[in-house]
Amino acid sequence: MGIDQRIEALTKYIDGAKTVLELSSPQLNEKGGAEDYRLFLQQSFQKIGELGRENNAILKEHLFPILEPDYMLTDEDVDLLLYFSSQLADTTAMKNIDSPLIYKQAEKMLECAEKSDSLRALILALDNMIISAYMMINLTIRLYPDEDACFHYRDVGLKAAYRLLEFLEPDKFSSLPDAECKELVLINSRYIRCLFEWSDRAGEDECNVNDIELLERSLALADDSFYHEQVPGYNWDVHVFRTLQYLADFTEDNNSHCFNHAQLQKINGYTKRLIEFIKQHPELESGCPQMEQHLYLARNSYLAGESSLEDYQNELLQIMSQRDVNDFSARSMFIMFTAPIEYIMTLDGNALSAQQEEQLRSVYDYVASYAYRMPKTGVLSFMLTFISDILCSYMIVPGGMRFRDMALKIMAAMHPPTYIHTLNVADITKYLAEKLIEKEPDRFIGICGAKNTADVLAKMDDVLDFVYNGALLHDIGKIFIVETIMTYGRNLIDSEFEIIQSHTLVGASLLRRFPSLEDYAEMAMGHHKWFDDSRGYPKNFSMKESEYQTLVALLAVADCLDAATDSVGRSYKDGITLKKYIDELHEGSGTRYAPYVVELFEDDNIKGELEELLNEGRDKNYRNTYHLLKTL
Image (tube, rainbow, N blue to C red; front, side, top):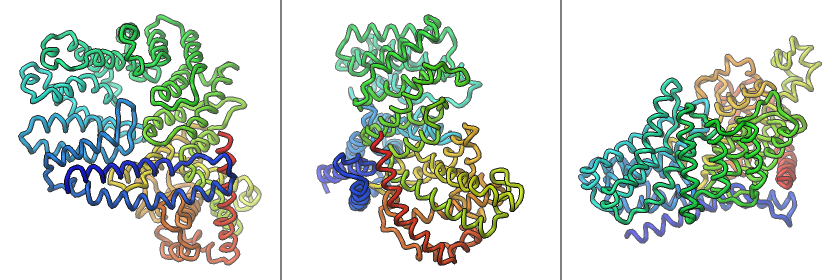
């Protein structure tokens, strides 16, 4: 098949993948009601199923065969992969559709380029690897407390970038085969900044010195006549602009990289130079609008000691007051989230003024609304980095949303099917807990301070509330990986299984940040671990040793029950019957599932009431989700 036909097929895949993202989190039909929404969501996932089968067939025929380990890419294959990757991602606009798939292609391109004698192929492959590594950093940096994946991609990207920078040596630069290769080397001399994520605080000062020097060397290239002569068509104005912008952005998250005072003063100087440069070249302003310039200048002036904390906070409030909540462009989104995040990071959570409390309430309200209304294609991964920062830095304010409610609103806004699943699981877990308390109350000793069986029965309502709230938060970590959850258009690749499994650790770590929620962390952590600890994840969680074993065991069954019997938002396959699921429960009794939970399903009354939960109860949760989304 010719290159044109292959491109046509992969273009169809891209269109299908975009449609899948749109259907995964559809907007409400203003003319419809709750029942219309339920039907629309079910129809959307039926369509997702069709698109998924078509997209998998396209990849199986046109992409995956050339990514096989023993296959050597042809020039036509390389052109195809470069085209496909460019359509899946646009780093300038901060958009991408499928980071893991782009990375898989980049690995193959670099592997084959290393075996070839083509310098051009190597340059193109290194550039593609740098871009794909950056996108994977953005995807995995939220997966705390396990940062290994993020730093793996950082190291891969930096290795490729430093190899490219070797070609800046004049003799090597002049030997590059064409202007495109030379431009890629120049671009990456500044783009390398995007890969700077450091874990070793002890070596951070040395890293900071190196980071600034790298960009200063890139900036100096614009004044070197040798490079001007080598690449006469290169846009040096954009080069200077982007390099200065990267320098100004070094101090993100209230100087999280811990630059020292002298370095902060230097960065502040470059920030002022950036502002002046944009004034001299107004055509560049679209890449750094005035509010973004305002943010850089306010932050770096404060950090350099030129303005007070109060002045800086007032500047941030002014920026936030000018935001356009209906502008969903990447640059606007940057301001929509960065300004409030920087503001929050300047606050003392133990000494908030009335004005600061009001500002926080406003921020949290509009973040949830904006997250729901924004398009879910392209900028989703970029935006999730800011959402994770908002949640991780969340401050409790009197009269404001509880963290639980904020997180659940974000979940509903980002992926309604996961929110509906959460409500269903909470109802089922609470119901099963009630029946188990009636049958074996001693299994709940220790929960809510119950010291004996009589205590459990006396505190039954408190115990059930605890169970319900813990189940509501069991999938809270999925917010941070929602773009992977929404990968319905193709089969998952190996790296994505690891990302999805991380949601248990991420959720538990997030809950432990709040004293009122930390007791629920075990339920978030352990609900995918088998009862006998033989399988499941995470590895460092033991059902046998957990003091919340009973609750986790109940939750694990409820989680699987809802997933197995519903199709929306899960695997877009028809759900199985409760009877079929009970058969699976018995097969896994003692291994995957706790025998004492499985035994509950032998009661005909319990089975009948569970049927109601899976029908009328599920319909109720669709309606509840609809009414919540109406408020966003």
